[in-house]
Image 1 (cartoon, rainbow, N blue to C red):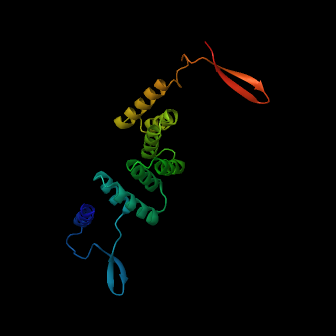
Image 2: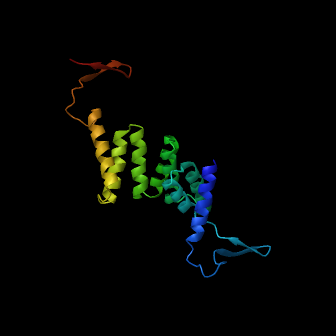
Image 3: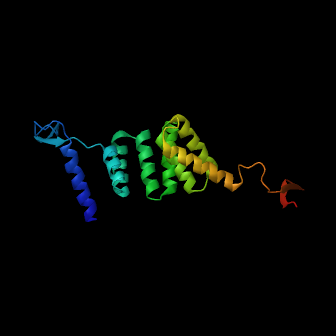
Length: 188
């Protein structure tokens, strides 16, 4: 816990050091005043969240992304970021829900498409994963080696599962038993 607090303090100092208006020590303070005191401008929660994700602090990143959602609304960037943080935390259901919402908002947002594919791979839903990876790959024009590798993995696992192989050795027959009932029988 103390490490997280220290990391937040370091990030706050680092963000303050990034201000290009160093000649005016009050330039980082916003124009709004409350009772004569100036209030600092809010730090972009999305940017803070991205930095925390890069540092491996996924819980803190998720909190920053929720702050961004409160400030900016549920944009495709925010929804995708929340989904990605949930994915890294192993919360696949929540990740899938947020990433699907992001894709609904923008069907060509490559990070959301790719990360939704990753969630579906984790759930062993190879066909759906392939669909999202193919869409991300096409929109990205094949430039991202990570998306290419994700697509290759999904295709390989889809073929291994037997669902994509029209010449599989599974011999089954569907037999009608009357009154809308069917029986699946293995044939020799």
